[in-house]
Image 1 (tube, helix red, strand yellow):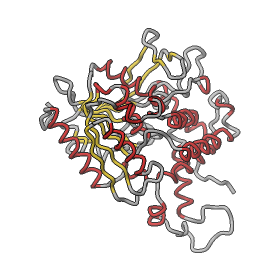
Image 2 (tube, helix red, strand yellow):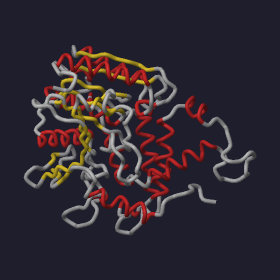
Image 3 (cartoon, rainbow, N blue to C red):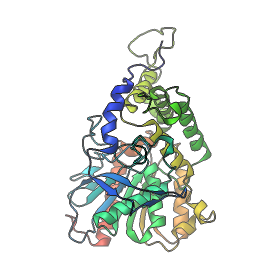
Length: 400
C-alpha cells in the first residue's frame, strides 16, 4: 500500500507551475546584464527577475512603504488569491484595510525571494544560456543575497527608505539582514519567530528534508524537468517532516490526539489509521502542487548559512552598532524551532548596541506557525508597534 495517498500526477503539478516560474501572475522587475546581482558565492547573477505583489497606495513622499519578507515555503501572495492553489493569501489576517498592516495607511510590498519558484529567478527558472531550467547549475544563494535583490527592487520602485520591514521565520532572518546591511533605509523592524543564526538542530532537520528529496528516484540529480517528472514523494516527505517542526506537541494533541481517521479500529496495515497521519499526508501532497523541489533545497540551504554574528567576528551587537531603527521582537512560548531564548539573545545584542527595542513573548500552544494564525495578542502588539512608529515618523492615519 502506498505510503502517500492522493498525490497529484507529476505532469499536472509540473504544468501548473511552469508558467508561474518565468511568467508569473504578479508584477515583475527585470534586471538585465548591466545590473547583475552580486552573490555571496562570488557569482554575479544576470539577467534575473523579481516577482512581487503590492497592496495599498504609496504616499507622495514615499514614506509609508512596508516590506513583508516571506517564510521558507511561502511567496509574494500575501493578501490575494494564490494563482496555483486558489486559496486566500497566507497573511490575510494581518494585511488589509483596518488590519495591523493596514492597507488604508501603508503601502505593502512582498517579493518572491531569489531562489524561489513563484516568478523570481531560481533553480526552476529558465537558464538563458541553455534554454532549460537552471536545476543545480543555479548558484547557491544566501539570505543577504535575497535582501540585496529586494534592495534593487525598491530602487527600481523609487523607494529609498522603508517605514517598516516585517517577517517571520526565514522572513524574520531577512528583516534582521535588512537592518544590519541597510540600517539607514529601515525606520522600524518587526522580526517574528526567528533567530540571528540557524541552530544545529534546525540544520539537521533541513538536511533530513533535502536527503528525502534527493533520494527520490525521480529527482535525477536535479534534472527532473528534463525527464518530464517530479520528485513528488521525496518533496512530500520533506514537507511532512518540516511541518511537524512548525507545530507543538500540545497543538497536535489538541487537534488530533490519538483519534482514528474514518474508522473505529486499526487496520493492522500501514494505511493512515490516525488523523494526524492523514493530516501530514495531506500537507505533503498539497505542497508539491505549488512548490519546486530544487527551490526547497536552495532556500533551506540559505537559512542554514545565515549567521549575522559570523559576519561580525562573532559579536552580534557589532551588527547593529549605532543603529537608529526601532525594533519590536516577537517570540512564542511553544515555538521550539526558534525558541524564545534566541529572541532574547537578539534583544540583548540590540540593547548592547543602544538600539530602540521592545520585546514580546506571546503565550500560545500553536508553535512556530503561530505568527500565521489567529493570535489576537500578536495582532494587537504588531498594530500598537506600527502605530507608535508611524507617530514617531509623522505618518497620518491615511499614510500621508
